[in-house]
Image (tube, rainbow, N blue to C red; front, side):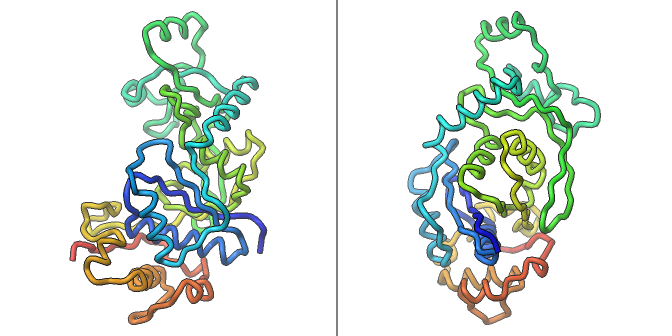
Length: 300
């Protein structure tokens, strides 16, 4: 048992679908089963759809997933992110990057780097070269000057996992703080020491853990959980049918029914059972969780 915190951090760009709700349930179970607080962060630095946040909160409450304390909005923390970037810059740990996304994709990758990794094009520009690019009208992003090419994290479901670290963007050219920076700073400031999220984000963990180490933040306990996929083996999306809680309610199902469906997918309930969150918490055993994606047909 611990006194730390777990979290769920949705982006208010639309309604939560079954896959999001399943991950939220798992994050709640991991946190509560270890005596941690469970916090909510609204990641609203990018696209925000009116009413989405309210519907997301309604759906989470309907499933019985409660949070501790006030929710945090990234849009209110811009000054904090800027201060962190500036502090890294004072340490010589950042540089300006004028590359477009297309230029990065078309550039030859550095040896042994995965596809899409930043090849370091702007890493060693001279002051004159930077001025020339700025005069051309390009607004630079700020990148981390990483001094490692890979980093190893420990995950409760995946074990020791080593992934690539490149010169990740800390602040975009439009001035918006980058995702990898914001989540690390937010988790550190909030005392979040347990990160439960979809395993599509496992590849991001090494670079985030590395950045955390530079900022003096302890690496969190990671648990990257399997995704929910459609019958074609692709990540579940709104086009796959009745995938939101409102959709399921329109078909005559209750939030209790949806919670039971999620519980069965996690091997925490049998057919015909409708356990509540307290029941699921009593049954929760991370070692018994399925390690493969949950494939569902939501078109019916």
